[in-house]
Length: 348
Image 1 (cartoon, one colour):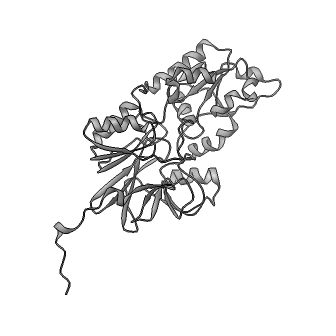
Image 2 (tube, one colour):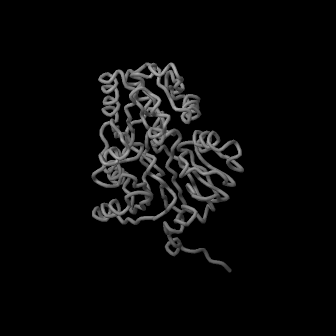
C-alpha cells in the first residue's frame, strides 16, 4: 500500500538541478535543452542572433521569429533541423519545464529566457541593455529566484553616456568637416542599424552609404519594420570619389583599416562601441571620432537591474565577472561566476 508523501518532505529543486553550465553551454536536464550552446546540440534555445550565441547545426531551435529570420539570413534556411518561434511573454512547455521569452533590448529579436519548474524560476539574460533603442523592443525586468547576467562592461569605469549625445557628436563633425568622408565602424547586426536609425531620428535625411557586408541585414531590419531611410552602396568608382565628401559611410569595424577605406576622400574614422570609453583602444585603432554607443548594459545598468529584479542569487557570465560577483556579495546577494567560454565581446 502506497501512502501520499507529505509536502514538507518533498525536496525543493536546487537551481543547479534546473540549469547548470557544461562545456556545450547552459544545460537544463529536466527539459533536455541548452541555452545559447557553443556547439551543435539536439535542442537549443537561442537568446539572439549574434554569431557567438546563435550557431547553426542544432537539431531544433526555439527563438523569437526575428532571431530565426536572422539565423536563416546568416546561415541559410537549413541552419537547423526544426525551427520553432517563441512569442514574448507566452509560456511554452519543453519536456515539463516552463519556458518564457522576454525582451532583452540588445538587438532586434533579442530575448531573456525564463526557465521555471516546481516554483523555481531562473532567468538567463543573454546580452542586454537598458538604454532606449529604436530598433528593438526594450528590456523587461522579470522577477526570479536566480538571475544569470552578462558582464561585458561590469566595471565601474564603464558608464555609457547618453546615446543621443554621441550621435550629436557625429552630426557636429559632419558640419565641421564637410570635405571629409565619415567612416563609422559599427557591428553588422544591431549596432549599424541603430546608428542609422538614430541619425534619422536626429533629422539626418541624406543618403547613408553602407558597406556591402551590411546590406543583407539592413534589408532584413527594413522587412521587420525598422525604417532606415535611403541607403546606397559605398562603392567608389574612379571618377566619383568626391561624392562621398561630407557623407556618412557605415561599415564593419575591421574594414576601417582596409585598403577599401582609403578610397574615400580624406576619410575620418569613427567607431561606435562601448569600448571607446577606453581612450587607448581608440588610439590603437586609429579612431579620430570615438562614439561611446553600446548595445550592452554598463555598470550602473547591471547593478540597477539586479536591484530591481531582486533575485536571491546571481550567476555572472562572459565578461568582467569578478567585479560584479563582489558587488553582489557586498549587497548580501549570493553570486558566482559561471566561467563559460565561447562568447565574445570584442566586436561590440
